[in-house]
Length: 99
Image (cartoon, rainbow, N blue to C red; front, top):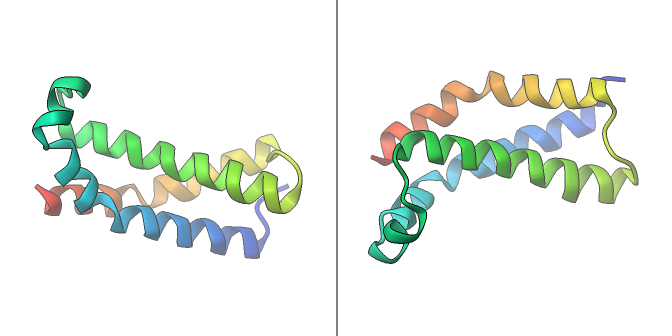
């Protein structure tokens, strides 16, 4: 079963919210107290991975499980992934602009 229209809309909203947080994330990981702890070799890839994981974690855990009362099916997980990857360009653009 693919994502329902309402679920897809919530996912799109969550993606936009996480994209809007990228400048703050970049600023924070550049703070001296974080640089020594995280030892990030590639800032852009770290931020991309963090943002991607945050979207998946929030949607699958906070929204899907809490509101739907179940974990997403394999097909729904595929649809979630496709939706996020369709926004990859926007995520990477936001990372580039935050540099």
